[in-house]
Length: 209
Image (cartoon, rainbow, N blue to C red; front, top):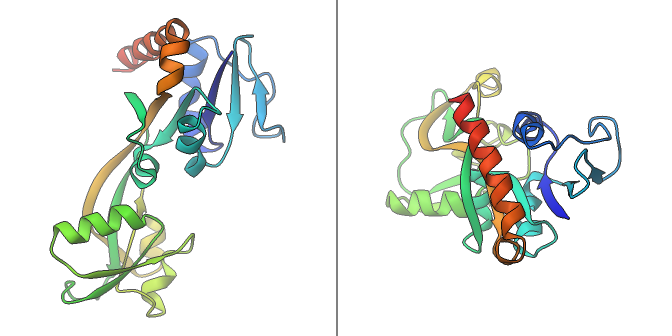
């Protein structure tokens, strides 16, 4: 049995063509089903539906053999213990800084609101900017508006939410897409099954290209 960890929402929906090309279709619809472990049309593959931020943890500790997670989540988690064989090129967006549209350029010691604490620390340290990082789990856009932070670090897809709150994206930290990750022990113990799956995913990527 292979267990694949994936989160509901955009990543799952955009991963479906890869899964279906490998003969993996959930028997229950994850949009309506409350089950967290989903059987699929392949008897040897099951899906576990979890929070996006938990995917690398489940794979690292062997609760899942493979997972699909955004590069932002992997970098924040510190996924050096995982194989990352494929960039699936799905759920694309940008990780950026954003500030109030009338804010002057950042200088001196600043406060940054984000859920990407490690990424933000590395980014501002590399730029030589002293940054106090304030961890938030949501409603990032509020932080500059109420004086909690000078800027935020967050994912930007269309920028419409920023614009609606009088913020604008400023600096690109990195482009983000979702990657396939593999548990190292599973890669040895279930090598043939995992390599077959990787080959099918690669073929789907090639067809998309």
